[in-house]
Structures are given as structure tokens and as C-alpha cells.
Image 1: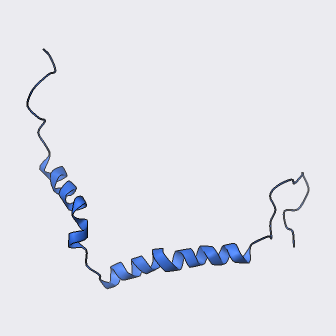
Image 2 (image 1 turned 90 degrees about the horizontal axis):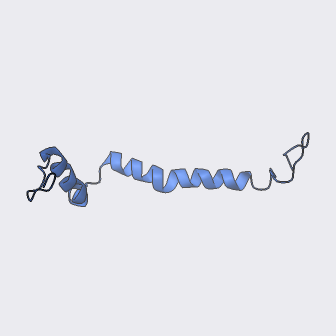
Image 3 (image 1 turned 135 degrees about the horizontal axis):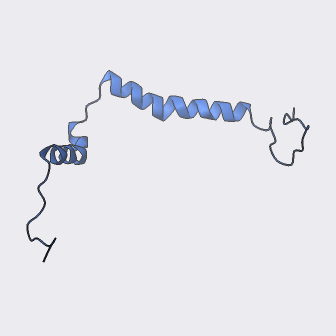
Length: 75
């Protein structure tokens, strides 16, 4: 019958290598200055910045129930 074969498709060696690297990434990870800076930025600096902005602007704007010509500033 057309289209039914019992042999598997040929795998691309580059994709197999990438897949193995992706699965075993934790085995090859090393802390370097670059990875420490990136981790600090994503784990500490960025959330702290977002938290600071949220804290300083809390309650300043009310976007609900406004009509044309009303100001959004509440302070």
C-alpha cells in the first residue's frame, strides 16, 4: 500500500545532537561571570525594578469608569 513503510525515517544528525544537548544541558552548565550576571539580572534586578515601579505608582491611576475629558490621575 502506498505510504505505509515499516522502516523509520532518517534522522538528521544535527537535530539528534541538538536534542541530546538540550536534554543534558544541566551536565554541561558552569557558573561563570557571564552566567552569574544574567542570573542576577533575571532573578533579582528585573523583579526588583518591576516591584519598585509597581509600589511607586500604586493608586496613582484609575483606568475604570472614566469618561471623555476626565483625567486618569488620582493624586
